[in-house]
Image (cartoon, rainbow, N blue to C red):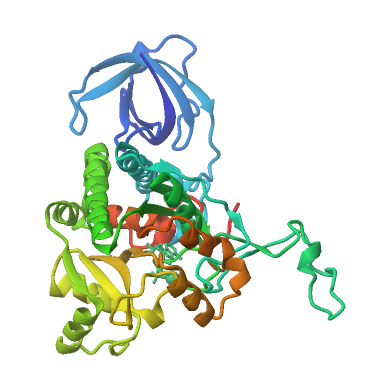
Length: 444
Ligand code: ATP
Ligand code: MN
């Protein structure tokens, strides 16, 4: 048989050499044993160094050594691509910070190879979950003229010359002269478009890149990240809570089955709670709690939080983590947030002060999913658009969906990298996406 890949390590003993060969298909290396007397003439050991790309022919045999069941006993080796002496990934372990500076080589490390395989498995599991349940994938646009939440933090997309843009008579930049005849941005969410899909096709989901120019240098924020956004017609907040719980459990179960070797590695090397917490989320029913209830419990906790808790404040990561990690000790579906801190499109509850919103909190991460039942009543929505100070003419189409066959509908957004962080135990979100984009840094 033959095998090809990159050499992870090269070890010479008196009579034989041992090569660890990896092609990225799995975590484990293939041990190649090179005994000169078995090699055809013309085969040399030259160029066999860590990082080199090689093709090996030989016989697969049971391995007498420890650590592997099989080994490839080489009869010929070809160095397909040699390696210079200054190859950065020599044997010693590197910090993740350093590896970020060589994003073009870090996929060749055990950790990043495993991350990329888990990402792939997670993506497959997500598509499988929806496809098996009759959801259609909707391709929402990346360039958009609407700011989904009216919240700012947008990247502008323009072909206007930066130094000397055309101007209106008042002196402002003339967006009408821009490529699309108006100002456009990179999308922050596919939700509004997903609503269009749901109100025609009943069950849809988007899975695409989203962009936020928020200047948050945290371990769980990227400027470019991938988001999964299902949207379901004839669905209320309770139905959404059931969907999100079965979704997370199912996806995690599939990843655990497909990536057993990689997850064992993360558990051993990165965070020893990876496997147990995965098991726990898969097996334990999620707690349901209202925001108001959570505030009461946070206040009664006796904890000195950095950000004080009062009804009406947005929960911080420290609050979310206390609730899920220490208080109920399981994933929490938190519902019915104050209207004032949530987006205009969320369904207004009868109490006139909360909306039918939902966040899912998990240990280690805090918020992993945010969603809501959408406001489907024309009059209420129109009023909320006005109160939010949004330009009503921009939302005509959105209001049309409430004039023509409106139904209760709901959806959520899962940050794909937060999921991968959760599954792998990787502490920093920059290490679970191949090419991280964060303030001040966008390599390639
Ligand atoms: P957070 O409060 O953590 O910043 P958010 O409330 O702004 O999140 P949403 O607008 O509800 O987030 O987005 C839906 C999901 O997208 C979040 O639950 C989270 O998983 C993910 N997400 C949001 N912002 C980012 C980001 N900058 N980088 C990576 N994932 C993100
Ligand atoms: Mn945010």
